[in-house]
Image (tube, rainbow, N blue to C red; front, side, top):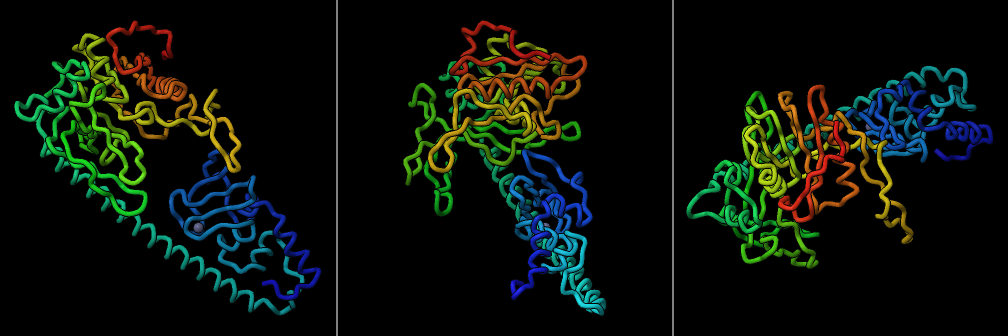
Amino acid sequence: MTRDRSPEMDAFVAEAKAVRVEQAFERCGYSLSRLRRTGGEYVGPCPACGGKDRFSIAPAKGVFNCRGFGGGDAIALAQHLTGQDFLDACEILIGQERPDRADGDDRERRERLRAAEARIAEQRRVAAAADAKREAGENEYRAREMARCRETFADSFGLRDEQHDDARRYLSARGLDITAVENSYLRTHPRLGFFHKLERGPSRLIHTGPAMVAPFVRPEDGQWRMIGLHRTWIDLDAAPKFRPALRDPETGESLATKKMQGSKAGGLIPVIGRLGTSTRMVAGEGIETALGFAAFDGHRADTFYCAAGDLGNLCGKALVTSRIRHPTLRRTIKGGATRPLMVPGFEPDLDAICLPVPDHIVELVLLGDGDSEVVMTRAALRRGVARHARDGRTVLSMFAPAGSDWGEYKPSRELETA
Ligand SMILES: [Zn+2]
C-alpha cells in the first residue's frame, strides 16, 4: 500500500486519515445511535460481524475496536465495515475518487466491490461460528457448575440434623439466633472440597472440611429455581470468625472462605420466612447480617429475611455516568502516581439484573454490612433505595454495625428513604 505515492495520493490518504473515527462510522452508513454510550465510548454489536457488545468506538483516542476483527483508525474501520481495501476505504471516507484512478476503471471497480461483499459475508460467517462455539462452551460450563451445585446440595444436611451440625454450631458460635430458620435453607456439608486456581496451572484442592451451604434461588413461573450455591467453610476452633485460615500455596495470599458456585445474579438466599406470604422483606449482603438483623427485628411474622450475596446484587449496578470520586482511596497509575478512585455512584442502571423484589412487598429494608467499605456501601444503599422504589412501597436502608452485631444497634432512620 505504501508504494511510491504521488504527492496527490499522499494528500488524498492524509485527508482520509484526518476523518474522525465516529464520522467514519456514519460515512459507512451506520448511525451512532445504534450504539450505547458508556464512559467516553460507544459500545454495541459490530455492524460488520455481529456479536452483542464486541464493538467499540473511542472518539477521544480516535480508534475503534472489534473483538472479532481487531482495531485501528478511521480507515481501518471503513475497511472492516465495508470489506473494501485501503484506497477504496479512503474514497468512502472522503467521498472522492483517488487521484490516480484512470477512466475506464469502472469494470475493475465493480469487481472489487463484489470481492468486498464476499469478504464481508465471510467475516460474518466466521464471527457467527465463533459466537456459537463460545456460547456452547459457556452453556456447557454453566451446566457443569450447576450439576456440581446440585450434587453438593444433595450431599448436605438440614440445619437441625443431629449428626452433621457444623452449620448450626457455626451460626451459634457467631452469636446468631437460628430458631426461626427453616431447616432446609441453611445446610451443612460435612466434607466439602475447597479448590483454588493457582496463578499458573489448574485448580487445586487445598482444603477439605465442613461448610455451610445455602442455595441461591431465583423466582421463575411462581417457583424457586436454584441458580447457584453459596458456601462458607467452617473451623469451629478458629474464633472469632470460626472459618479456616486458607492460603494460596504459592503466594501465601489469604483466601476468602466464602465462595459462590454457579450464579447469584437476580437471585437471593432465603434465610427466614416465606417470600410469597410476606409483605415486608429484609435483605442483607451476607447470611450472618440477615440473621443478626432478624433477631434485632424480633423475627417479624410478616417479614422475609434473605441475603443477596454482595452489594451489586443487593442494590444493582450504577450507571457508569454516575461514578463518584472516593474521598480518600486512590489508585496507582503508570509510573507510580496516584489518582482518586472512582466508585459506583447513586444512579441505578435499571437494565441491570439484581435482587428480585416482588410487587406485593410494601416495605423493603436493605442492610449494608458493617465490614464493607463505607463509601461504596453507602452509595450502593442509596442506589438500591432508588432502584427498588415503587408507588406504595417504603424502602429503607440501614448500615449494620461492624461485625454484623445488631444487638447494640440503635436504629436511626435518618438514612435514605424513598
Ligand atoms: Zn467486527
